[in-house]
Image 1 (cartoon, rainbow, N blue to C red):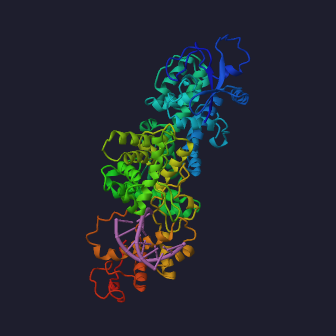
Image 2 (cartoon, rainbow, N blue to C red):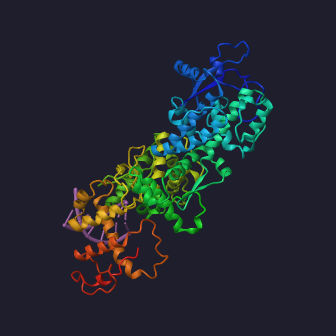
Image 3 (cartoon, protein in one colour):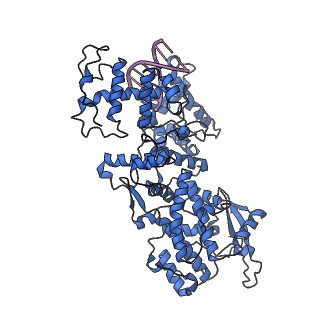
Length: 618
DNA sequence: ATTAGGG
DNA sequence: CCCTAAT
């Protein structure tokens, strides 16, 4: 989270904003530090090496750091520059990608393009994988917490490292014109004027800098970065990877870029378009990828009008998930919060509190603690956490709210007696939006208080949404135990959120039921689902119930159901449903309501609905 | 701790 | 999936 930069201690020094107003002189650079011979340029300006810490404050650099920098700048040639500015970028990707695998793949995709550019320039660029990331990780963290803006770093605007500002350029500058950059341009042979031309072509703006070296550096960097962006020019549409309009992509922020790259290269890297082969042919192929593709496919089919969408839409969490707590509190009082407080205040004296259902007491009790804190002015505002769960391990649904703003808002509102919708819901919604939306639809809400943990966590959450459609023989155990459970920074656990059943899981379930009998779910869980830690016996039971429902409701409904059921997830193959029905019949589990209407003889009669051999179409 | 059912 | 009640 630290960036080594050079800052001028002298007020007179010009600030290099990275875009305009280049003075004719050499731009601020670390070079001055190591330059043992200030004579040729008796510049009164003194440069001091500092670090920018997380808050944007400047901290004197340690000797060690100075040495490192000196080392890096020992030989300031263009190729070094190229390599240098690549470091942070690559490492940012590392941070930006939810999975290591993604990182690797995206890096590959990019590096190839970058290499092209490098070749054109007659320069050598280090492969991303080989880059030592000592200092890069630092800048990476920094740029994430302060996306695309030097503003977040007061007083250090001028100190931003060259490569950083150039990245900003690319993100904000309009469409560069690459026409001049075709073929192999050897920057070394160009005149200043030509270099300026090239610069203009690269960045889309004029420059008055006459310094050849600087120009070359900038141009080469620009090329590198631009190509970098071009790799994001993919979109997934109905299982195909399409090329996207470059222009559009170039406007994406780096953070988004990372995500997009991840997705795109995932698909591009796949051996084939066929999902089955994709999953089956490569044993190591991460299920998640297959799943994400499947999911994409489904969503497209679900709503043809959305085919043009470049990014997946995010399904907002069920309202129930969000409100969960508010439900009970709201009844009986006007405002939920008020009711909470009331229940607390009256707990001691009011008999009503005593008669309150247990869960209500529990529900009210938790928020109260935090409220007491805020009222007492302790200053420590604890974010609102979902209710504590008992029984099987659960997770807290809400990620921690950033800096307790939500609570503050709530408190204020309550104080003002503002009726309105429950503030907590709003806040939670906001948080959800920001934490669940994949970045490329939406500005990054870089909550100031969010740390890296949160960030990674968020990525994980995002990924999780694409996770989960598994194919028959694809590998599922893949140590996903962890996947449904994202530890929150508070130490609590986020709630498990929809883990679609894979076909193999279903099969196992069915087998299990066949073997051990329906109802013996803990048994089945233990024996047949040993490897699926995220499926509890209750889950099995629920799933079985659904299977039952499905298997029996399918036949009769068949006609009116054409477009009705847009299978949001995997359609369960007919044979399996058939099997389910058989088992159900066998075990006399056929609730009359499931079967095709007529409730004649109930449990025993096994021959009734079975006749309809035409069973599942699906 | 497990199960059955409702939501 | 979650939650509860009933075993």
